[in-house]
Image 1 (cartoon, helix red, strand yellow):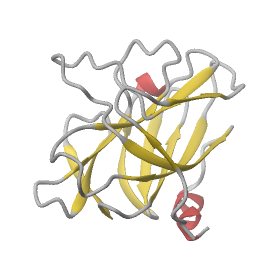
Image 2 (spheres, rainbow, N blue to C red; image 1 turned 30 degrees about the horizontal axis):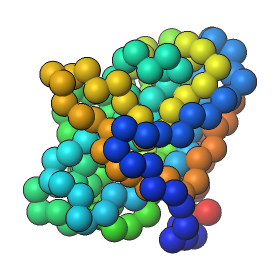
Image 3 (cartoon, rainbow, N blue to C red; image 1 turned 90 degrees about the vertical axis):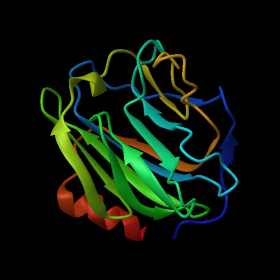
Image 4 (spheres, rainbow, N blue to C red; image 1 turned 180 degrees about the vertical axis):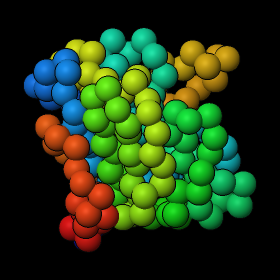
Length: 168
């Protein structure tokens, strides 16, 4: 299902995607991402940035945990959570946002986090994958990450769809 193809988004570089969504849109993003085991422990990998002006923090980060065997996810909630996936392995990430409501993160079919998060609202014509504005205490937050697949849906995927997309 998740192949071994993709592109390495090196530090300080990302992929800009024009989406065509209206400013009041609810949406979902599906991404296949991978972090290599040779990556520095604890270094943040920006996965998704909805701000086309690149003037705020990304809304979804991954990092290798201290044992370098698994990944932790930060979903703009102030805390890291076990992502349920390993380094050197592709992970299917589904991030949904309901305008004026909640965002939900699924990784490999498992619901990782649900919470209100207004910063994911559509503010322009494009999103970034793998890029951050690096303003949190001068910390680099967009170290290298592999992106193998990315899709944007103009609606919030259901829980069943979020889980089912892992098997595609």
